[in-house]
Length: 148
Image 1 (tube, rainbow, N blue to C red):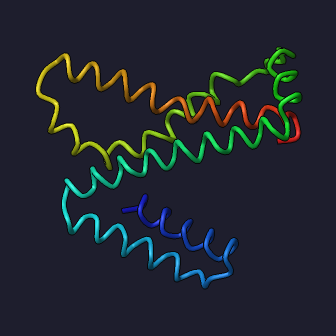
Image 2: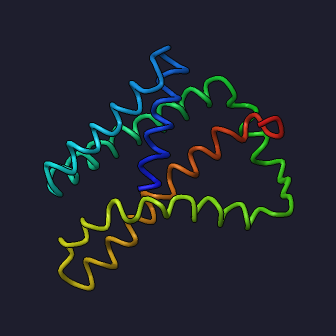
Image 3: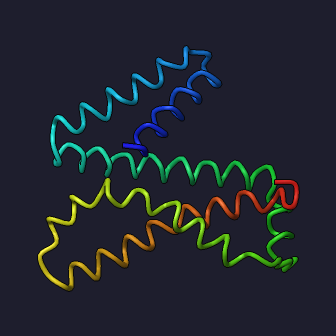
């Protein structure tokens, strides 16, 4: 419940800031969207999330292309500078734990897994699919380091 409240509040703030809409337009739209998905059941949620994944990955890739177009030289030089600061491991763990909040939302999809082999394969694929956006975001941001 807390996750949905934060998500709806974020949607309201983003739509207000970017499009100038009233805050509650975004909040209500998010709550209605989530309600419709839940009302239509697990199959609808699975289809929506699979399509959303493709849109999300396309957005990350487009963002990375734009960043490399504008900051490509800075990104490459920052990667090879090798400046490692303390606290990097804790930062990585925080990133991982922040993303654990999505697990309850997709846990229902595990009902399709029938064998141990499918479970292990799904876990490996989910790990790869889950970390790639973090790596892409890292490369996009490193071009502006240490200002970002």
